[in-house]
Every structure is written in structure tokens, then in C-alpha cells.
Amino acid sequence: MANKKAKSTNSSAKSSKKGSFFSRILIWMRNLILFFFVSTILVTIIYRFFPIYITPLMVIRSTEQMFGNEKLSMKKEWVPISEISTNAVDAVVASEDNNFMNHWGFDFDAIQKATKRNKKGGRIYGASTISQQTAKNVFLWPGRSWIRKGFEVYFTGLIELVWSKERIMEVYLNVIETGNGIYGVERASQIYFGKPARKLTPSQAALIAASLPNPRRFDPSHPSSYMFRREKQILKLMRLLGPVKLNEK
Picture 1 (tube, rainbow, N blue to C red):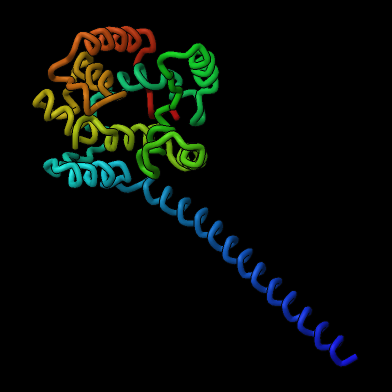
Picture 2: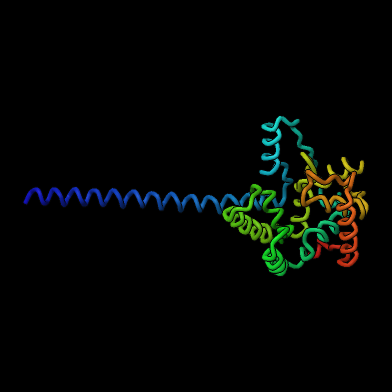
């Protein structure tokens, strides 16, 4: 009888320990999730008002340079949107995201079209909006995994909720990769055309926009035949879409 009671006591103790262990795991997970949401919301609010001088992509590229025996280079200069030519805004909207002013971070029509085209095989088409690219550049790492894409959806919704369209565009134009070790249209404009971004012509802005899909390969100051074709397409779209009025939203 005593042995049965002892076994029962041991069994209860083991069960209690297991319950306590799982409870601690659940509490830890809850705190981790809570910390993630609170910290990311707080950082997004801070980034709404202050310049963003470093991004994960900049760190990754610098690491690649160091381990690839390249000269460490990070050329960037933050400028307010008022110091960037409206031609640059119009060019990236024409090139990257025609519906930038009308969507809430995701262009579902573009996603649907890209999905249909990709089913045919061949070249893979993307449908990332400027908001998605900004969220990826500021908060995340390059890649195509579903985990990273899930985070991208979250951060895209967050910046659309907290930031204005003008702020999203300002951040995008300041942190976007525009060459090997070059970030933002201000430094790109200075390096490629010898002038500040506020003086970019429509053609120069279109050439920078044309290089964005692969900025480490394409050089706006020495455009290839492909870039000249893209420049003409972008300029045509800029005329069709008209000036982007960021302060309206």
C-alpha cells in the first residue's frame, strides 16, 4: 500500500514538473511575441521622424566586401524629400510601382498579373511595391523564403499604418541600393551625374530608376542599350501618370 502511494506521489511530481516546464515555455513565448510587437512598433514610430542611417542590407553588403577581399565602401547621404527632385519620385513610381499613391502597401492587381506571367515560365516577374521594398530594406534581409516574406508583409502593413506616403518615399529614396556600396539617390546623383539629387533631370532620374533592379550591374552614367530602352519606357510612363503628389496622402 505504501509503495502504491509512493508511486502515485512520484507520478504527480513528474506531472507537475512537466506542467511547470510547459508553462514556462508558454510564458517565454508570450513575452517574446509581446517584445517583438512592442519593439517593432516603437522602432517604426521612431523611424517616422528620424533619418535612417544604417540598414541590414548595408551591413550585409559591407560584410560581403570584407570577406570578398573588396575595398570597404558605403557611400550614402541622407537628405529630406524636399531636397530630392520630383523627377526622381516620378521615375521610381513609373518604374517600380505605378499605383503607389492608391494602395495600402500591396498591389493585388500587379501580384495577380505577375503570378499569371510566372506560370508561363522563363523570366520571373515580381510585384513588390515601393512600400514592400522599403520595409525589406529598412527591417529585413534579402531573400525569397516564406519566413522573410511573412515579416515583409507585417512590416509593410506597419509602415503604411504609421508613416505617410511622403515618408515612405523619403526613406525609400534615401536607403535604396543604387550601386556597389552606394545607397540613396543623393549619392547616386553626385557620383553618376556630378550634381545633387534636387537637380536631377527627368532623363537622369529615369536612368537611376532603370538601374534599380540590379544596381550593382547597371551604371546610369554609362547606360547600356537595355538601360536606354528602359529610360524611354520610364519617361513615357512618367508623362502618362503625371506628377506624383505625395503631400495629398
